Image 1 (cartoon, rainbow, N blue to C red):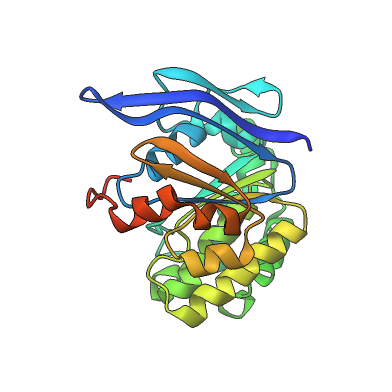
Image 2: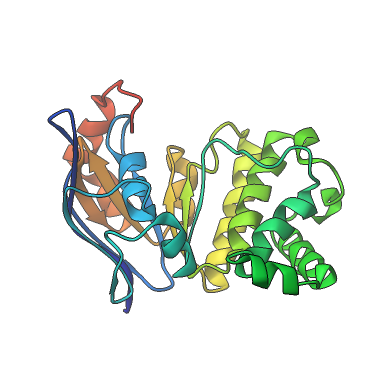
Length: 253
């Protein structure tokens, strides 16, 4: 299958400690890949390298056939990469639909001239409502984001990311803090988005949901890629089980 994302020997160090070590991983167009690992494994650091928040000290990152290793977060977003964050930070004084409209207008806010010429609020609102419907919270579109419970805020975060029209969606622990019912419902939304053609990398601690929905599983441990493959096969490996049972307590994952 066609690779939409490729990490080649990606490495980054902090204070002499390698947080991510020589990671090579390919994500194929259309797949739903789960990225797991114990606390301190390097998952969030690796995600930040993919998005451009951090730059690797060694290795390359490609989107399609384009080397984006040294490109900014904004340029990667324009190339079709979107990310949701574990800690949701919407514009709390704006409504849910306004939050998504702001993201949906990204193509018109790259320059003051385009922003000035863009007057179709109706089109932006229609698009935002479609995305809220897609993630199952159109009924709270007119409520202030600051009044929404966590489960709806997580869905709002996904809708905002979808407004960027991504080819690749990186989800950083979207199920964190949710009860089992909310986690299962959001997992189903993620599955539907993938079935609609969006390639997804899911970073998540809740293994039950991860194993239920992903096509393929990659596991990091101590900054290294320990295993990649079919979810069942990966979880049956003795080294994977040992990594979880003896996982680090370091929260900087």
